[in-house]
Image (tube, rainbow, N blue to C red; front, side, top):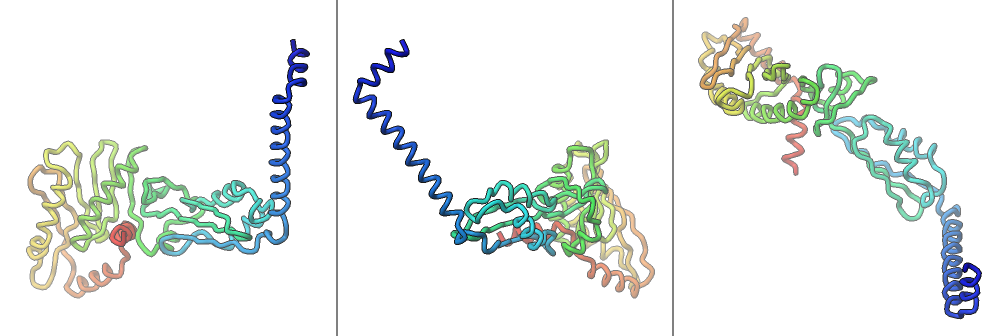
Amino acid sequence: MFKSLIKEIWHSSRSLDIISAICVTVAIFYALGFISNWIFSQRFFALKSVIVDVRSVGKSNVSPEEVKNAVLQSLNGTALTTELKILFDSISSNQWIDRLVIRRIWPNKILIIIEEHQVIATWNSKKYISATGRILDFTDTGKENIQRSLGCALVSLSGPNGTQKRVLNRANELNKKLVDYGLSLSRLSLSELYTWEAETLDRTVIKLGGDKIVSSASSRMDNFLSSLEWLKKRNMHNGTSKHINLVDLRYAKGFAFKVKKEKSSRNNDDSNLDAAKKPNNCFHNVLLQEDLV
């Protein structure tokens, strides 16, 4: 049967024409591939420059020189023939990189765009969390170095495993409210019993309780902040002031608070100056970017 099929094709001019056309087409494509590969491998297309665009908040943690060295070590052809996946894998191993784009620029350049993780808080004291809620583990970088690089104070966030985005969203919500009153969030924790506790940069602890209270945490916070100016005036006496160091918002209506007397008006002025010198928390960087957008 096979022999008869071959014989039939051999004696059919139409079948032979089709086979010939297929063979010629394959040969042409093979030749074009070989020629193009030979052309793009010439010295004219040899890599002449690597353009590195690192986008970060504050001081960059990814060195352009480090990226260029990684490119040179991973280069396996000209600018047009080298495998970009090898470059991508080599560069993306840097733990600070959030987004990486590599493009060829005709005829002999490579463009590398890097967006760094925007670290805004610590998570359970040992790790860090980005503005997108991603947990990061920078074992070789200390908190103080990161804060110095970013020019802001990292908010301390904590909570049960898997709750980082929930805690981050609540922290962002509270910080936006505090900013309107000249305050900044320093700490927010969600306990194993799912109760909330916050603290501001000027060391005011705010107990928010759980989410099952009749009134929402947001409305209870609004109620306290709207009374803040009145509380400050109430606590001023004979040139001295009392700092509100604890606010209990675990009531459906109203709140309780404790104050701590400050030593003198001079010390109070000094403490205000010190507070003014303190950097904003890193959530402010996100707020500024949102305003720009």
